[in-house]
Amino acid sequence: MSSYPTLKLTYFAISTGRAEVVRLALAIGGIPFEDDRVTFSQWPAVKPTLPFQQMPVLTVNGEAVAQNVAIARYVGTLAGLYPSANPLEAARVDEIFLAVEDIRSVLLGLLSIQDEAARKAEGEKISATTLPQAFGLLDARLTAKSKGTPYLLDNLSLADLDVYTIVAVTKSGWLAGISTTVADAFPKVSAVYNAVAAHPKVAEWVAKHAN
Image (cartoon, rainbow, N blue to C red; front, top):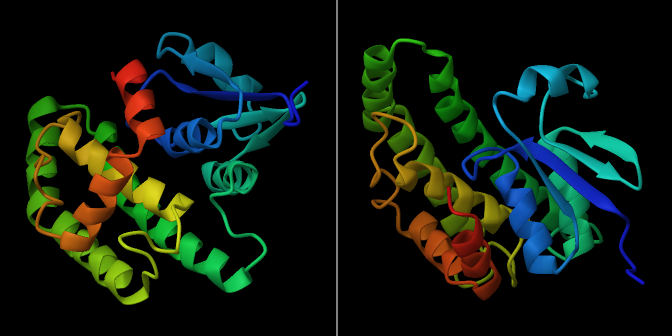
């Protein structure tokens, strides 16, 4: 019998969004969960049933938990990837995680631009301005505060996983106009990305669920 609660993670059927860090944390922790992937055609029917009409949502023993940061902290604690017993280290993880989510919000904001040419042009603009600045700040903070090599703490944490996911989004070519090499100029960010990508459970997950 599993010592874990019964978990169901509900999110779009993509690997480039806000839930991927949670999926990876669950996979790394060896925590069983139902990977409930919602298609875009299903979304209008699913949306009104959710607490804030947003995804991801994690259902824990039948009870819904919303907001990706809350979900990530909860799952990270279960998986041993969030240092909840050390408030300062938890704050360090949070600041990196939230900085990454700021970058993600900029990228996902491109999806609101309906015209493809305009979306690509804005992506190119972001790649030349906003992203280098944001990745530069992230790189500097990781360099200044990292305890591990190359991880933020002594061991892998949610912060490292989220850095990996945001670099993976830029490398995926999913968003038109976004340079697939924009993060390559930042050595600490790249080192974290490469280390997480080489993690056996991450590599296994990506191989099974690439989309």
